[in-house]
Structures are given as structure tokens and as C-alpha cells.
Amino acid sequence: MGDIECIYRIKPASKAIGEALAAEQSTGTWVRVAGEREKLRAWVKKVDPPYIHVVFPADLFEQKNIPQLLATVAGNLFGLGSIEHVRLEDIIFSDNTDMDMGMGMGMGMGMGYKGPKFGIEGLRKMVGTMENRRPHIGTIIKPNVGLSPKETAELAHEVALGGVDFIKDDEILANQTFCPISERVPAVMEVLDKVREETGRKVLYAVNVTSNDILTRAQAAIDSGARVLMVDAVTSGLSSIELLSSNFNFPIHVHRAMHAAFTRNPLHGISMGVIAKIVRLAGGDQLHIGTTTGKMAHDDVRAYKNILTEKQNIKAVFPVLSGGLHPGGVAAEIDALGKDIVLQAGGGIHGHPSGPRAGAMAMKQAVDAYMEGISSREYAKDHKELMAALDLWGRTDT
Image: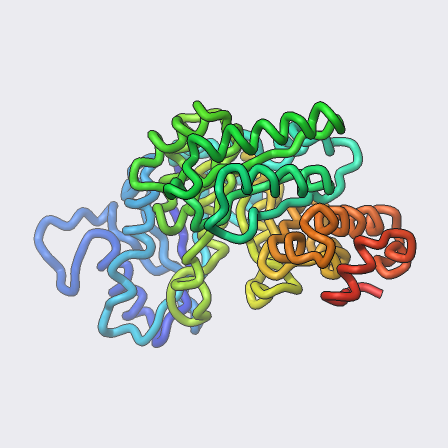
């Protein structure tokens, strides 16, 4: 693999500060010490206030070790007393070739990672949307927690019949006693099999296997019938994605719960773009990126979508839009981000005045309207489910 270049937003931004950061995160400490290996020392490539570019030699990094990668490029530097604030804005991987690296993912997988096993195309093939290329429609089982396996399955049945392509556990639903995986997964998969028999449609269900023993939890979910695995990758560590990808041949749905603790501040922490790159590198097949219109709209969603889907030598990740999404926001999201997205609504489906099935139908109708080139309000004149949703939540198209 080639060297790794990192771009930091720093105050104050000077060469001396950059050199201090480079030393702290590679061979040295606050003072020169005997035995330092110069070939392993990071160095300042450019100072362009408020940004400093630091290059880390390839030999600093162990292959397939995301924790060590992050400890190096995003470690003690956040606590340096000489720095008022610092944010890791971008991480650029290189394989030292003459090819165009784009956003910096074209590294020939020199760190030992192969990226997603399924990605957008694999998931489209599973669902059956290779030809029409419409956005996928997803939902989260709501309420977040408290439902029994039977109640969970009943809701899954309703939204599946309503037209969703993808169902996921909420990020705080794990293996609690009120809804254990050993009972929840078979119940949900049974109703989804019935939907497939009745309609010919395949609906995917992502089971949250986040735990302190994720491989055992994932195997138990698979033994119970799971065919898509979900992980809260920030709370469990980004290397959890690679663990799942290297041990199981199933799509991995990545939730980003807790990310905003260090990504939201524009002056200090780590950008969500860096997290998106690592998720793609490690093998995530889907990743939450927020929305352009909903409750997560403060994020730079377009940039994250580009990072996940730009052409590289690894598969593209399916961007998942979630957070306050409802049928009235569908057109604006597709206009902004294109059709290779998952439109995932929780309350925007389950909160429909006629129930979850009608909510799923309304989301599907909003997508159909867009694909046919018709405004949602015009399309709703002949589709009461969509009309009810627009009347309740409004719309962002005309």
C-alpha cells in the first residue's frame, strides 16, 4: 500500500503545530528521543490555514487493523495542549500508482480490505430492482423497543405487504428478554416468506447483532434464519464491520449511532466522511447518512453519498437515508441524491393515520410518482394513502 495523507482543520494552523502533531502520531513525543526511525516519521506536506496536510508512511500501519489506523491518524492529537481545536476532515488512501484516486479510496486494498461483498448491485439483485433502478424503500420496526416477537412479525408483515423492500431492527433493539433474537428472527422470516409466496417480492430483514461477542451473536441470528446482519458500528467499533464481513457471507447494514458525538462539531473531532470511507473499506453494504430534508438535515449528505458510491476498485455502498423521512420528502431526496439510495422511514411509515401498511403504501406511491415523472400531490389524487400522508406531513415537491 502507499502512504496515507490526512487533512486536519486546526487552530492554530502552523508548520510547527503540524510537525508536533506528526511527531506525536508517529515516531516521537513532545521532544526528540533516541532511537526514532526517520522512515516511520509522519511529515507535514502542506499548511493551508485552517488546514494542515500530514502524510503518514505506509510502514506505520498494520494490515486489516482499523483500531491501529485510527489510533495513528486520530489518536492523542485531540488532547495536545498546543492545539485549540482539531478535526480530521479527510483521509486519503493511495497505492502510489498514476491512476486518478478520486476521493482517495483507490488503494488496491493495500491494507488487506476488499470492501463490500454485495454493495448496491448485490442488494439490487437480491431485491429484484436491477432493471428499473428505483430507490429501495426501507423501514425500522416502531416502536423502537418493547414489542414481542409476534408483534414484531405482525408489523413486518404489514409493511412488507405495503411495499417496503427492507426492514431493520432499531439500533437499541438487541437481544432483550422481551424480544430475543432466537424468537424474533424466525417469526419475522416466516411472514416475509409468506409475502414472497403471495406477491413474488423479496423483502430483506436486517437483524441487529451488535454485542460484546458479535460473532457468536451473528451466528445465532443466522442459525435462526437471518440473511442480513446489522451492526451499530461506532458504538461497537468500526472493526466490527470487518469481523462480520470476513466471517459471514451476508450483507451488512451499518448504523452510525453515536457518530455525532465527534462528527457534528465542524471544528473538532472527525468528519462523517472519514467514517464513510472506513465503512466502505471494511465491508459495509449499507450505511446511514441522514437526509437532506428530515431531522438529520444538518449533515453534508451529498458528500457522504458520493464517497459511498463513486467509482472505485471496490463495490459501492448503498446509502441509507433516514431520520424524519416521510412520503412528502421522497422527491426532494431523489432529486438531491439520485436513485441509488434507500429511502428509510420509521415514523414516516408507522405514524400514518391508517396504519403501517398504508404508510408503506404511501412511500411506495411517492417513489412510483417520481419514477413516472408526476408530482406527489398530483399522483395522490388517485392514491388515498399518499394523500393522507401529504395532508399530515406536507411535501417538499410541487
